[in-house]
Length: 378
Image (cartoon, rainbow, N blue to C red; front, top):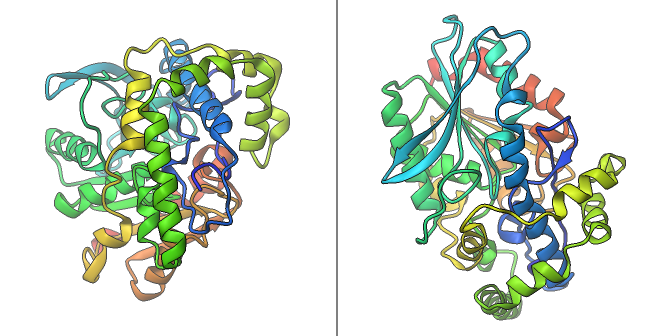
């Protein structure tokens, strides 16, 4: 129920190699509505978490060099800013003055600033001022022992928007970064929002809300979710990370995770993932995300016609096995796009990280939507 498939991989900001973000490949962003989708086991989830946590080291090595556009003369500014007493890593590329709109990029589960290496410079080239930051507890931002939630991160996004001091902002999110952005937009409205393969919640616990489940399926789903909670709160997780940390295991996992280009996974890449994360508190954050409150679903946030006139660009990778287009969220937003003229829904060939797996299609779609300035008619 929790780990049937892992379908998204991020290429590294380093040398264009395939890279995975911190535990983003784990099940918290996955929809699974059938008991017949049996678990592939804790082994794969542990490997995915190990690979993800290893991206912290890659983030340190890569810094901001791949986020700079060759055509853009302004060096992006990377710095740490304080939010509620904790250090948050941020990056900004100032626009050339031709665009009033500022773009704020919100990464998904286990992601970081480097998550946006293929979209950030393209937006900057077009003259937009572009911002990205590591969510509290993820990337290279501080990881204090606390309760993490979609609501907490939505507060972080809202405070960031307030600090910008302008209403001319478009939010762009992927996976649960889309969900965070949507919740933030419901309370502090931007000009528009771009959602890439939106997640159903912080973790899989929202699966029990699915109307596609019958009572028996829901009963067994709750049992499975309870078991996962027990495992992730126990020392088993720590031991499992150490047990499965080898090049062969990680390499095999990576090839399964990257549906369109498994040949990009090489020995050098796998070795880089095997190294454990050196970021203090990373494993504790992973536990919190898995065992915490999943937060509201997109369906709940948009219930009753809320934000009916908010311009939305929804982009979905048709090969996503984590949040499939036929799942609850994909189906809901597909129907909403038929009912709401404010929603522009586009399907592209990609998995869960379309902006990295098929950047040409995503960049074209995002820039075309921004150029229309749909908020002027909303």
